[in-house]
Image 1 (tube, rainbow, N blue to C red):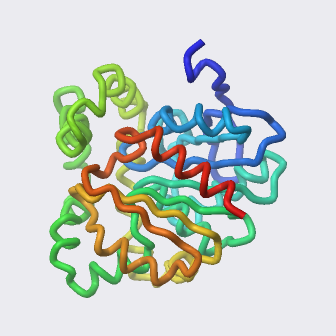
Image 2 (image 1 turned 60 degrees about the horizontal axis):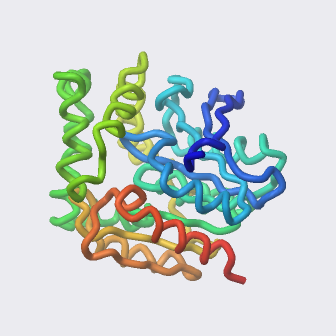
Length: 291
């Protein structure tokens, strides 16, 4: 049996979305929710899930709203995305869970821990600074972060990014993974799985809609509930060779996390869960078990 043989796949009908999820581990284990980022889906956690379930945890890794097999209906606001996770935890018959997020999943994890501290036991965030620090870096003109984030502005252009990223069988998105990660991180099979997810009807537009929803939320000053101090014990893991995010912003963000710890990976990139799955899983298990 391979490490993914005990995965089950289920749909959960929530009030605002139907989420497709990978589920594994003993039903009575402590619940861990794993939130992927752009442009991935539950599969990004394939190297992490077996270690968590072997340690007795119940794991649920959704395709977040708009991705792969989940529904492609908006809105893609933090209000909606955090409500999805809170409802998913309730759908497991639980009041709270350990929540881990990478990239955009990390943004949702921060937002949930800020706005709904009652549902987050322990928090893990990979390669995404605390949201307040990220926003502040942009507003104050941190040139390194602004340079790394220019693509967010490009994505605001209607239709053009969809055309560019999907051309030549999604070559642009495949390169977004392979040219920014350590050599050999993504196998041809991995890339084919990602292409299959991107090619689902409406998926690419929905994935980009997460970025397009941000300016209006900022302009309407809707982000304050999601950018507050974090009460949960928090572990932040950060690959320093991230082409899109500056580790100094992550360091600054720890001011908002009084019960937090940042571990830096100088030789790794943005794609830490797939470059160092064994180490990431071990650090998460230590974090969940710490009392």
